[in-house]
Length: 327
Image (tube, helix red, strand yellow):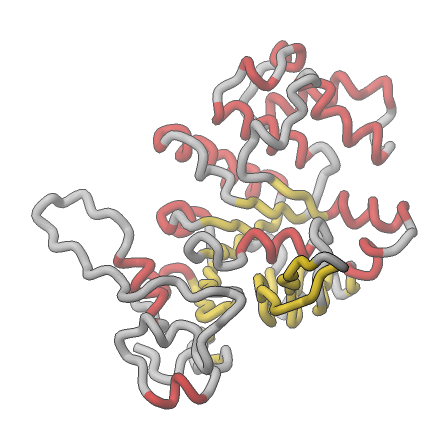
C-alpha cells in the first residue's frame, strides 16, 4: 500500500480557562478543541473533514501547520514529524515544510493585505522562499493568475476591486506560488454565493488533477464535500466519530451524528417531510459529557454510552466508527 503523504497521530489542542484575580490568574478548566484526532491522507487524495461549527475542524488544520501550537501529537509529512521542525529555530527546514503544505483560508478578503496589489501578494512567496529568480517573478505571477482563471492585468489591482470568488482565486494562486504537494482548504467556498461556489469547486478539482495535489478539504457544506472528496471524516466536539468513503457515508452513515448531518441537507422538494432536528444543544467543550460526547443528543443512547467512551474502530469493509450501537 502506498505510504500516506500526510498522517496525523493523536493530535490534541487544549486551551486553559483562566479566572482572573487581583494577583494573577488561576486555571479553572480547559477546552478540548481537538481531542486525540488521527487520520491519514494518501497521495493525490482529497479527504473531507466535516462537522458543525465549533467542532474543531479549523483548529485541527491550524495545529497541523503550527499556526496554533498543538498541545501534543504528531503530524507526519512523508513519514517525518513536522511539529518539532515548525516549532524550532531552523528557518530553512520550516520553510521547506511550508512549501510542501499550503493553506487556503476561509475568508479571502481577510487573508489578503488590502494595501498590496494582487501581483505583490502572489509574488510575496517568491521573496520569502527564494525559489524563483527575481527576473521571472512577473511572468510567474501571470502564469498563476491564468491557472486560476484570472487575467494578467489583474496583477495591478487591489483586493477591494474583486468579487469574493475572484479573491478566493487569488488566495489559491498565492498558495500555489510555492508549488506545494498538499493544500489544506479551510471552508474555501463558505463565504461565496452558490453560483460562484461551483466555479471554485471545479477549479479545485481541475488543479488537483493537473498538478497532482493532495487535499484536506474542511467544510460544513456536505454537498461540496461530496463533490470533491474521496473519503470523509466526521468530527464532533473535537473527535472524529466516523471515517468512510464518500459514497458509503452518504448512502448509509453508521454514526447517528453523521446521519443527522446528512438529514440536515436542504431538499428542493417542497412536499418532502423534513427530518426532525437533533434534540438538545451542543455540549460545552470545557464540560464534556461522560462516555460518548454525543449521547446527550443521540436517539440510540444507552447506559453504556454514559459509562464508556467509544473508540474509533475499523470494520471489515474499511470504515471506521466510534459508536457502541452504530446504525
